Image (tube, rainbow, N blue to C red; front, side, top):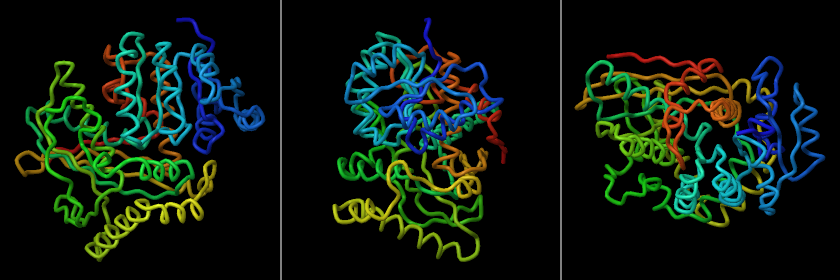
Length: 396
């Protein structure tokens, strides 16, 4: 397939889109990658172009004009989009990629939106050969990848794990696009959808497992108290779709349960866990009604705004996945990187995953909507290690 570009960054003038444009065009990195940036405003795109070490081409495309997206998509192998909320701006990009058989990646955490896209475009994507890979940012690669590594490590040692718990430690800031997406999900989705672990699985008979534990809890393996993690339901749905896809390929996993928790300190840990749980419930109450959402929109960051470079640089992400077999801890998989999770880490994850798509480094010949680990397998770990992510597996 001859195209003018390997990768187009759509929504390049937003906060994370601008960071991604700079990441993929920085001096000394991805030198052979033919990158273009796309959006509605020529002037804003030129400002992004000026901020890049290597100057990407500019394409004008608008989600309200499908013909402009068709023209954009036909010029590239893959599209990486940051134009959210995706439930508002995302479908025309998905539709164009499915129509023309091009690869699609995004950083969404909007599971109800992706469920609708699967229902509408899976069949067409299978016919055209499009590979559609949402959840390619902090939502939900750490969850998807650590589970993939844990299952592979257990197989390599000849044992099975039936319980996987991922514990997060994070520090960073919030950008306006993420807040807008969260508020849009709360406004247009119901709680049943958001907490449905099988929302991304079309098989109504696929087992659901137990309900999530929303109370503070002590983790003896890590010797810390824990609280629920606010992105847990979304990441869990992605992990379960990966397992469902592997089963559809004839590579079923041993049945396992998966959950996510936020790790808090040792000193006064039970108090911290209780306060964190209360804060999460409070945020849920605010987003669950129009008054609370209006307050957050008024006083929170606006789309296009985000944390300062210092906040982004001083942030970090650490994930520890504890794998158990019949109640006994058998292994711990660790994944970590410096940088604000919602911005620096998300951009690195999305850009490196998009590079793999542009290089056609797919692990399996599966079309349609797939997850990052199903798409790239071990290649994803290798590429992320080169981008500064650290992985370690310990057998207990």
